[in-house]
Each structure stands twice: as structure tokens, then as C-alpha cells.
Length: 100
Image (cartoon, rainbow, N blue to C red; front, side, top):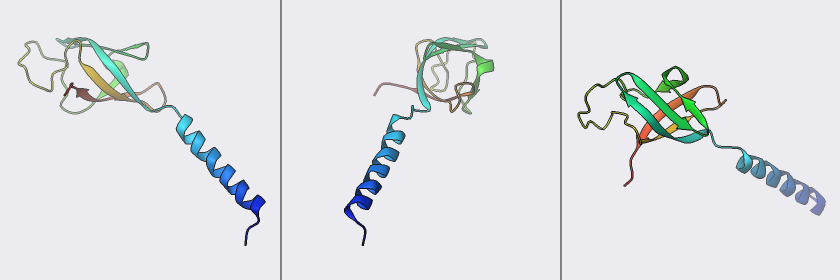
């Protein structure tokens, strides 16, 4: 049977682990499309201006369009997007988001 001190030590240790997990910054970011279409793409995210060479795009998202057909996969100025980055260097543009 564990002593009171051992139990308290285990509780304190697990609380420290939980606090570390909560305080970790998220790897997900929200961004705003500043420019899109005709092969140009610029996204503002956390003070950064990201361009195609800075991004990995999810399959299906398109910024090369020349005529806006209204398709839901076209990135447009003002769109909100979700990005993922583990290191702040490589950004993965996961999805275009719309307000419900």
C-alpha cells in the first residue's frame, strides 16, 4: 500500500504532465486569403505572409483559376483557411472554411 506522500507525489506529477499538455501551443492556425486566382496566392497567418512556395495545399484546393466559376474548391480573397504547422516553417493548408 502506498503512503500518503507517495500518492500526493504521483498526483502532483500527473498534474504537471497535464499542465504541460495544456500549455503547448496548437499546431493549427487560422489564416485569411489576401490574394488568390490567376496563379497567385497570398495568405496572412499569425503575422506571416505565406505564398505558394511556403505552402503545401490539400488536394482539390485551387488558386490557379482565371474565371471564378463559383466552385467550392476555389480559394478567393477574404476566405478563411485552416493551416497546420509543427515547426513554423512548413505550412499545410488543410481546408477552406465557411461560416455556417
